[in-house]
Image 1 (spheres, rainbow, N blue to C red):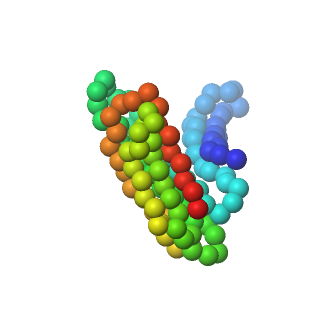
Image 2 (cartoon, rainbow, N blue to C red):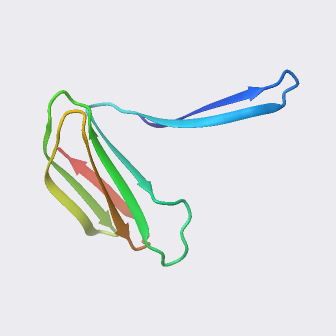
Length: 109
């Protein structure tokens, strides 16, 4: 599963586009989701990158003792263990990162 994009276009009978809209949504297997995003689309060289993370629990029971780890170029930048997310709730945070070659985000429950 993953992120999907729903696109709609309203056109006249002559084919002229009157309006169009896009809406993104997620479909997941399981009871938890992990969403990531950046605070903007374009960065200048040497500018910090702000990573936004949101873990959501869709299960009928609380998620107990979860772990979230962010690694950048093999070095741990963020680690949170013993995380509890109640039913229907989420855990959100953001972290500022130096521009690097690769970032790895992982979670465990």
